[in-house]
Length: 166
Length: 178
Image (tube, rainbow over all chains, first blue to last red; front, side, top):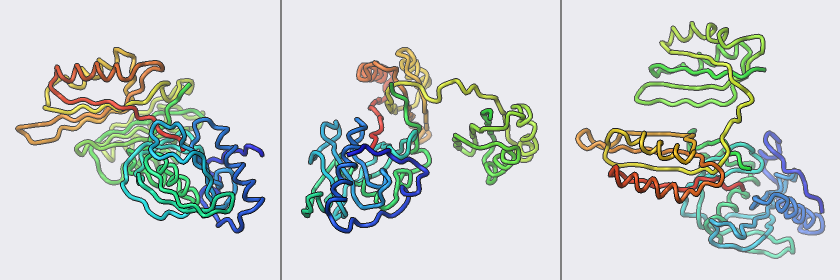
């Protein structure tokens, strides 16, 4: 399956409400594979939502395996039509987004989260995630509602140029 | 297009940003990176603007002079060198220093950082507490040169903090790209 280009601002799809995945079947499984392949193509990437690859459907992939800030770690997982059931214990941390190059921002997000969705196999899945995995899930959930981290930075002084690494 | 750094400082009042940016817009300038702050009623802003090649820094400064006079601002415009990288390479760390106010805290801390080649990219200091017991608080954003041992720098700063009788902590502030 192809690695798709990751769309960046000002692509309109990034600011739109994504539509529910109607039926989990062949096409949606292809979407899951594309999300995984595209995420894998960027080594630092820990999550990707369907709108970021130009698909206005409610689907994302997350994988925080090996991340130094991870607490819970469910490995790589794709969820369709994810719903946030519970979120508490907010902390502020600096985050960036593949779709918003050159900027990072301090964003407050819950550290303990329960999310429910459908797997690519069509099974219902309820997951309890915390720490960095919770941040990743919430960041991807935001993408499905057209919300970017820029919409959540605490104040004008919470926005930073992304540092240059080599 | 050429880039210019426009700085304006003066007593804060409503309308400064609108007035300055209005003149820049009339002269075909596009605002790119900007920052402003107010310290105890004193306003300062810096704008990086892209302007037509036909205008020069001094043209823009003259164009801004009426607004500057009207709002009692000091305005300066300088041409920028577009070949200079916009941010230094390296690892981002945040340093917090606080404690009883005494002269030289900023100088000593930043000298220790400069000795390892660290670049201070953000700096905020405030005097808080009461008049008879002032507390100095400082937060720095620094970029350590690639390969620098941040924990060793942190130890150096802890030694200095002990000598100065203040508290100091340092932690990585790398953003996670999601």
